[in-house]
Length: 230
Image (cartoon, rainbow, N blue to C red; front, side):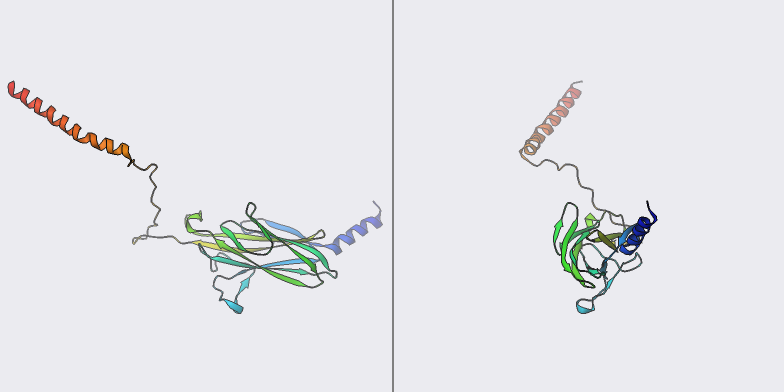
């Protein structure tokens, strides 16, 4: 490879995109190439008031306020064209994490992959567009944690003409644990494996009870008479 071609490739690569890595809760990191497109994701704070004063943050750590079963979680996804040319098409994908279900959002939602997909057309230079995604925390019985809290990550991706960007939003869910007066956790009642029969067959069995009792009494009387004869 010639020195001119090598320098051209290095120059074009460095000018086209840079690599950005973002840590993921639980360990590891995700690295993506950043070019002329940027996606920013924020999650609504659980204690945020309604209306114009709503508070959205990048992440909610384990030490901050948490969501609970049945709560709605709201996200803001902002895509920005950071380049100098209009992007004709930008595809955005959002992958829902565990313990939440889809409520509303732009585009189409695939329930099998838990992925929301929508498209932005003709995103001009330096233009930003924001969409809202709403999910709901599953019921208490579906939170498969013994007690305490669990944190999960909602991932979003934006791609256009070979360029891509990603952003994550971390939030935590707290499971309410019922306790007795003594402070012990209340566990759900164990369900019977089979319900005792109550149909016509049961009435037939009940009908045999008097006959069985009569047999026992006759047997005892017979033994008493025999004992007296002896």
